[in-house]
Length: 291
Image (cartoon, rainbow, N blue to C red; front, side, top):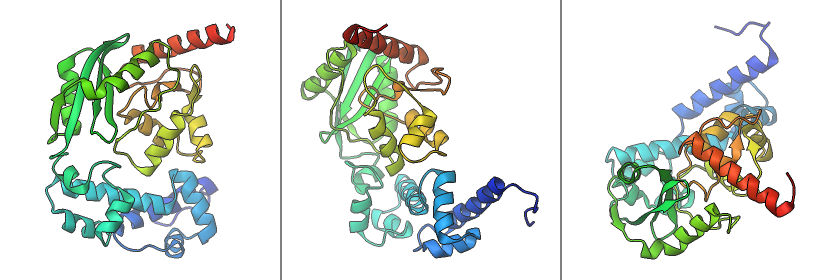
């Protein structure tokens, strides 16, 4: 049914972008030119590019890439051979897969298909000021940093992320990372700069890198993060990126709050988020001499 002429410009723009999204999802494996997508949306190419990025939070090309990557990972989890999965997703060659890294920076597609089978993950669980702290590494970087109350629950959460990996509970290779994180919690190390090997989309990494730039003792709202990364309409996507962060503290998602300062949610508990922010604020005040 044609849209009423009385519809607002904003609602017409959203409807146009939805048509383009549906087209991209139906043809994600194909080569999609901007001009053709704009025609589907009924907009000029330049206006379509700006409108799509404003409404969705990422460009049409990035959206198509995210759809491709999601389908590629889904096929791998279903046991589809890597070669079949990459061509079905529209990558065209193995070199394109390794260039785009749809399974993350460290895991190869074959390893991802096996649920990280063949990958050995070192794990250490220690006491911290905020409960039990789990730190895990693939050897290429930290793949998980978690806070919790129960060691068994932390291990189960990690196994859910990497169901076919081999886990070795050995604190030795993680000693330096664990020490830095504990020092960070004790306010002795204000900024963590540890290598990460965490799976995420380009948008998630854009958010996570921004979070790492937020100074100790400061916070940002979800809308401010979205504006600062150049995606002002992607507030919900920013919130999802924070919620799917698997490396707490190293990626300080606790420093993102609601527009009115409310703590909103936190994967490791709002009480821990409150405690983290209170500790950082107190330390910052002590250092700067402000109240």
